[in-house]
Length: 143
Image 1 (cartoon, rainbow, N blue to C red):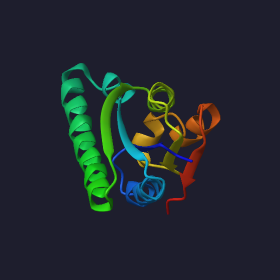
Image 2 (image 1 turned 90 degrees about the horizontal axis):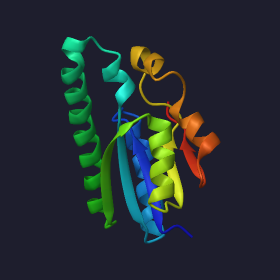
Image 3 (image 1 turned 135 degrees about the vertical axis):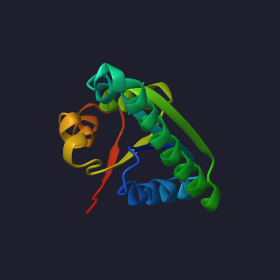
């Protein structure tokens, strides 16, 4: 049923459970697991000019760690993994990626970041993906 499963990650702690679901579905369907981390350009553009490079670098480092977690999960489960880091607005980048890569299922958590980062994201990325995705979206409840 699924040949390609996309797990969108923001590097938050809740991603672990979301990744477990995505990996299991990919394994059970002999599908490729795609991991996507979006460097939210709104976060570093909103920073002071003197801090923009530092904020961007921090986001990219966080993305590297999050994508490494997806690779490890896939390897441990015997699942083929493709990881990508893109820059943009998360919900739009996720849906665009799903369409461009012919993704069959998107797996996301109910929420990611909290506090200031959540306010900076101007709403729920997951909700926006659910509303605009070209394919089914599995939303994993995160405590």
